[in-house]
Structures are given as structure tokens and as C-alpha cells.
Image 1 (cartoon, rainbow, N blue to C red):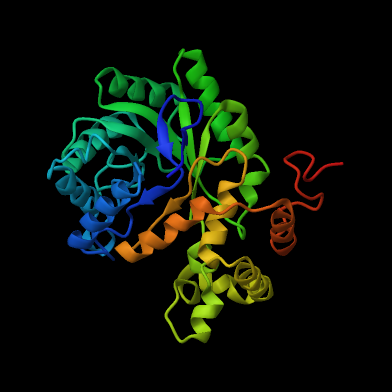
Image 2 (image 1 turned 60 degrees about the horizontal axis):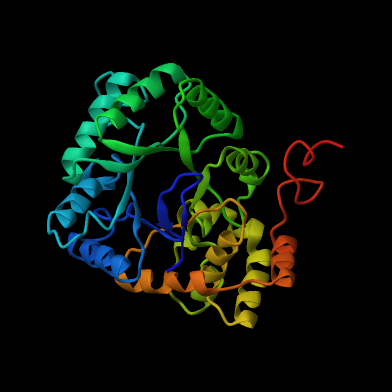
Length: 330
């Protein structure tokens, strides 16, 4: 496994993040334990979760599963860079969601109880809270850091100007600020290249792409359908994009075959070649799926292959692969 620094911090993390959203609703506790053990065996030390994960099993269930895995000992907690999130409502009563100082305090303590640990390495805002001032947010976060409950802070689903707001407010308090931003980013969804990626690189914020295969569309969906297998890309959110991108996806799968790699590995490898990307989130539902995802780290894409991928899935701007404002100005 390769390792890199998380943003401008001194924290060393694996180039793949183990996403745990399936633990509980899709993956049994036994298999979840096996996946986490297998991740450690292969050198993945960066695990991501959220307080609301659990799906139909209920909010908090995923954190509870991870907590019971930590409780087995054997260095499991010590070897894990643990990231969780807050923002969404955990109940129907006021102040059970968003980023007020009150909810930050309560949500952090509740996550620590479920995770059966006394600290979280990376505490992330799952979304921007437009109602709560940054002075309040950073003050509440600084208290958590002083108490030793949280070491680093990150964001998710922020716009570029939100990153700038957060960092400038942190700078005024002489606070480290954000070290990471989780954004949806893949060959089919490249909007972050306009402003989020440039802002993140400027402020030393590591980018952690979620949905690296766009819900399965980049995971060999057409091949799986031809073979009669089930595919995530044929249902749910991704299915609505199938007709729009069918020709590009077909060419993409042919390119993967020519390179001798799995389409899913190609999509993740492409992200690992993008400047500013720390580590994509992989979300295996089985130990076998985890084994498959590991191949992406060893794939090197040459300039011609990267150019071909840009032709198949162009950057989101009429002026080519340029950041804002050049992307939409002269």
C-alpha cells in the first residue's frame, strides 16, 4: 500500500479509504469485521464513516459495528486513522443536527460512545451549514481538540468558496483549520475541477473523492449486463445517467480491456493520478470486493491514456481542462 500526507497535515494515510456506509444495511457485522481486518492486512489504515450511517437498520448502526470491532483489541484502533462526520439530524428534536455548538458537542460525544473510543482522528462536517457562523463552529471544534476528543477537522460537499471561508476564519483564530474535503468526484462528475480542487490545493486541503465509480457506472456495468449479472449502475441514481453516457461508457470499458485492467480499477486509478487527490473512498460490500479494489493503486496511466479518458469524459468547461475563472471566461 502507498501512503501520503492528509493535506498539509503530518498525518500519514493510505491512498485508499475504506468507506463503511454499507456496514449494517448491506453487509453483515461478521463480514464487516472481515473487511476491516482484511483492510489492515493490506495496509489500508484510513477508515471513513458517519454518525447517520445505518440505513434501514437505523442511524448510528455503522459506528456501533466499528466500535465493536475496535473492542476486540489487537491494535485495531491504534492502527486506524478514524474519520466520522456530523450534520444530518439524529432525531426529531431541535438541535439534533447541523453545526451549532450544542450539536457539535453532543454529536461528538455520541459518536465516541458508539465507536467505543476516546478520540476521533478526523471529524468532518457532512455539509455546509449556512445558518451557523464560522466563529461558533471553530470555537466548538477548538474545544473538542483541547479536550483531546478530535485531532483534525475536515469538510464534505463544500463549494470552493466555502473552503475559503472556513480557512480564513480558522486563520483568524490561529487554528489549523480543514485538512480534508470529501467531494463527489469521478470521470462522470468532474465539477470540483472548476473551483473546489484549486481552492483545496491552495489551502493545503486533501481531497477525498466519494462515489469514485459514479454508483457503479464506471465499474463495468455494460459488461456485467451482457453477462447477465446484477450491477449497481443499472439501478438507482446511476441508472438515470446510463442512456446519456452509454457510448462513452462502452468506449471506456473497451479501453480498460485493451489495458488489461478492470473498469473499476481504471476509474479509481484515474483519480489517484489527479493532483490534489489524497485517496478515493472505496465501499466494498464483501471481502472479495475489497481485494479487487486494491489493484488500482498499482496501475500507472501514461499521458496518452489520460488524454483518451479526457476525450471520453471531458472536463466541465468549454475551454478545456482549466480551472475557474478561465473555464468559463476568456
